[in-house]
Length: 473
Image (cartoon, rainbow, N blue to C red; front, side):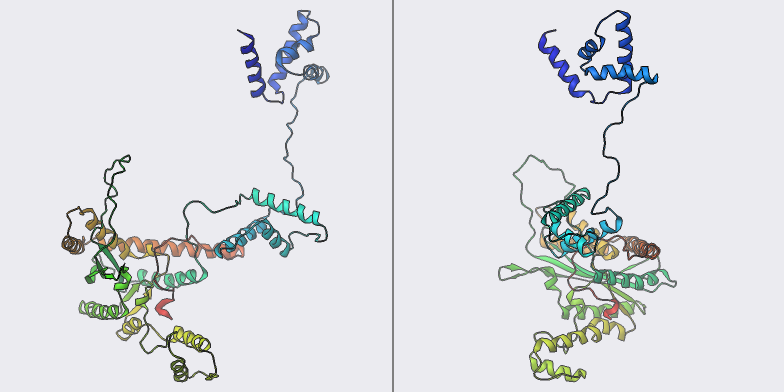
């Protein structure tokens, strides 16, 4: 074995071996000391140190340790394991307040750095700084930076998917929705419920995500998402029995060009259209013999249209003044600004003027409930849309015509299995009850802990209008 190889082995051992001498190594050193002395080798400590690559003091101290104590032991490795005083305590109250502070500023899209956190801690009297001493401030800032690093906060832009965080208004609407719907779906006899919604399918809609493809083939055709489309609206009625009904189905052509812009399918559903459709739906429901029905729908703008006589923000000032007089407002003068008049009228309209369809339903003994935003997984009609559009999309080929899409769409609706609608309603009902149970459990634990808590939050699809309470009251 050449000299280079020998030196390589020495370097390898020096790099891989621990600096601290273990108990086993000390026992080996002690045994070698005995063996060398039995062979009458002189200068044993130096020879062993040369052979083992250890210092003379390590070899000598091992023998001395045994002669003094009749045993060998290992020194405690140096480590920073003891607790030290710190200017920023890692207490739960401190970490939670910092977390909430950073979270709130992220929501407001406000840049946050260690200086902002230091100002928060100073305001809460968690740290005290001698402002006349710049070194004391710099020292405390370094402590805060170390605190943030230990709590795994990072600089920069968050990577990955963005999730929704519910506002207090969303939580209030969610709780109101659960408070109304949980008794509705659990009490017997069950009150009839109609879940209604709108959607669309365009001519080239395809559901081929499970199709084979060559990942290395870059010569592919770009999917088509524009052009004519079929808009449809319907409701599913559930009365607690094993059989449910598809009601109010209407399919029409949408997506026509307005200049160079293809309109979104929501623009094809207007308030006037929806009022007419809802009137026909009420007739159909009552023809089936159902009374006191609960209609559940999302917060689309055309679902909440107020009567035409309701004042609007773009009305003339004279019309606003007359509306204030009609409503009997006090302290209204012609010198008031238009914005002041509109603020009073809007507050009154939001509180006292019901949407047209809510009034229509109440006059005929029914109720309207607006679903909680960000919780589309509680609406079974969304699952029905997925089933129907899946049938249409999986049948798509390059030779599919617009009439083929219509025929497949109609067949998909009328071929819904008799168990599909009750099953989807059962799925969402169980989710609703589970969410309600989680809310109750969170409130109970929060009451014990003396804090305000909230259960898990959910993602959802878009909502076309602001959230309101049950029946817009």
